[in-house]
Amino acid sequence: MSYNSLVNIIIGLGNPGVEYVNTRHNAGIFLVDRLASLPVDQSDYGWRKFYGIMTCKFPDFILAKTADYFMNESGNVIYDIFRLDEFKNITPSRPPLKEISPSVSIGGGQLYVVHDDLDIKLGEYKIQKGVGPKLHNGVEAVEKALGTKDFWRIRIGVDNRIPNTEYRIPGEEYVLQKFSGEERKALDEVLEKITDEITKTTH
Image 1 (cartoon, one colour):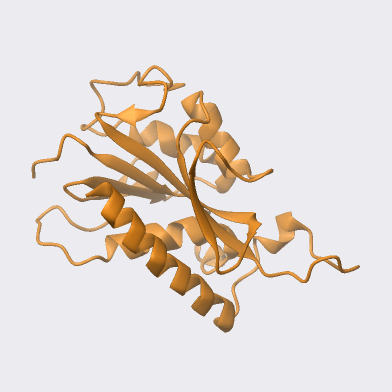
Image 2 (cartoon, rainbow, N blue to C red; image 1 turned 60 degrees about the horizontal axis):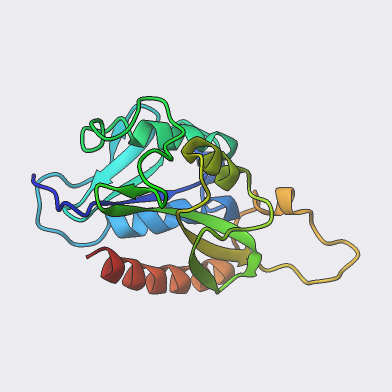
């Protein structure tokens, strides 16, 4: 399989294990799973285990998600990605990876990190470079591994709490709760919009 010189990496952050399926913290994984299901005509298709991550390779982008690492260990996802054959000649084996370029350009492509975001309401999203939530352990781990904040973030809103209530659930507990049926419908609509946008951007 040949690769376009402008290969983009899209990483979906989340937690491994069946107990975290359909939780808010795994919104990033939902998106890369959706992208992986896109109809394609190629031999190297489908999720494959590589060290502690799963990868799915397309001609124009590589998808990745955790297989073994929890959210606060997301820096290890970065380290494993850059052990792939496509990048072994342009990065050190153990980053920070800021040596790649000031804007984390990978062989001419870009890095996109997809994650849940409590600063954004459920049903909304933002695609921004160098801008993220006030607090997110997974994003912070990625920033530390890369040695820079200058990469693209696909921020998926997951907050559906009633604001300014006495019994508002703390964020660290809320992100580990599962989506309700209605909430999942709202999320799926957002994932469809992001999928359309990201596939246009990376092709």
